[in-house]
Length: 585
Ligand SMILES: [Zn+2]
Image 1 (cartoon, rainbow, N blue to C red):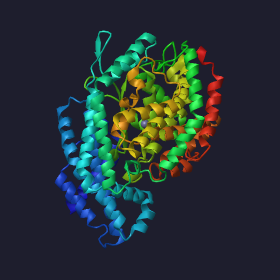
Image 2 (spheres, rainbow, N blue to C red; image 1 turned 45 degrees about the vertical axis):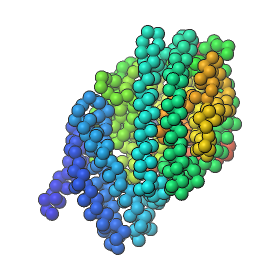
Image 3 (cartoon, rainbow, N blue to C red; image 1 turned 90 degrees about the vertical axis):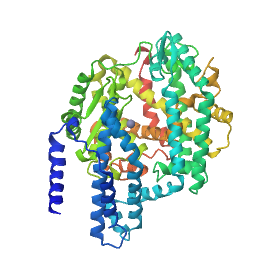
Image 4 (cartoon, rainbow, N blue to C red; image 1 turned 180 degrees about the vertical axis):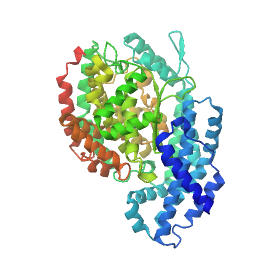
């Protein structure tokens, strides 16, 4: 007892003093968790909840569970981050296998904790202590899960992996080289029209060659999800899809109204912006392969390497506020920015969090494009939010996805007064492109969403009906999209490329909702940067302690689901874009 007590104290000191102030990411210690010990510790604490014990015992047990979960989460995150930093490191590859197998058993206890909290006779007092959201989320978690669907969930994961592998295995022959899909991106965006035209056609050829396989995978996914929904007592997969994301304060009717607003207020503006782009690019009849390019002179680029950019980011966050200064210095002192592309490193970028060290971690692959600066604003926005809500209980450190993207997308806009440090003579180009690109994304985002509603409301649709449905909705939201001689895309297959449709159904509208909220921070910061930042900071501190609409309202933002809100938000953006002579950029 005394030894254990002593060790706990020592460990706490280790975590807060040594871990919090001196250690660097590479010194954070990983030890493979003892699963049996974890399970027995969890069981011991769970025995004290909803078991007739007094309130003080119960709350102590819940807090102990949060600590156990944080320790486990820290070890898991150390493994996943280190594995992505060097995929060739055999040690962390073995530890990844360990966690892949252990996770279902660990998660089982997470679900159990929530179940016990719901059953507690002290539920009302617990709600006062922790807020009611965790209980709402717990109810959703119980609704979306039953032992009966575990094999279906495993099959769903298997199908997702099949889809990712099929795309990752693409070997596309182009102009004497062999490329995968992401390596084709520079050709698709080439300033040479013939190159981007031919690049689109070879990419389409790849998807056409795999049409039967992709159709089969998707059909199996749709049937599987529909049957899971029926087993859980839902009418179809739509509400189950919403519940799986923990959406507790809006439904498919609100989302339909929101899509209608985008159709009425944003589609005309994006159609106009596309016409301006065609003029800028000196093209009479723009085709689909012309849309990825913004300027004949090429897209804006940062004017230095990663070290140079990080130095500018440090200055920027220092000037922005004492809070952002403290945050970014913490990231640097503890080596929590893993930015440069190198052999063996996994692709892409992300932001995650190590609870025991109260440390966010940013992973990226810098490549000299404007995307590098996005990491230092967008991913840093995510990191700043979680850093600001680090003292919340684990459930509330991150909000649901549509809210989480508000923090990152808004930071991109709050960085505008300093953005010239990165882009120098390309600054005006960057700003125009940032705003025009963000607004142009909205119709595509709601297209992806409307398509999925059509699919899961009518799971019996044939493979060809699905393609026809896509093309019909695509023409509604992107009326300017002309596939020219690309007959395969014209048939309605662009969605084959959109991984979210396969791996995370109904997750996509989130980006558009967050974007509409982030635009409001852009408008506010144009008027008064300090006021905008203060509101942003207050929102970051709330973390995930409230649901989406509650967070939006707490941050004094307008709720995008309310009729007329989208058109009001779009107006100042259109005004700004109208004042820019983009033909001179
Ligand atoms: Zn993000």
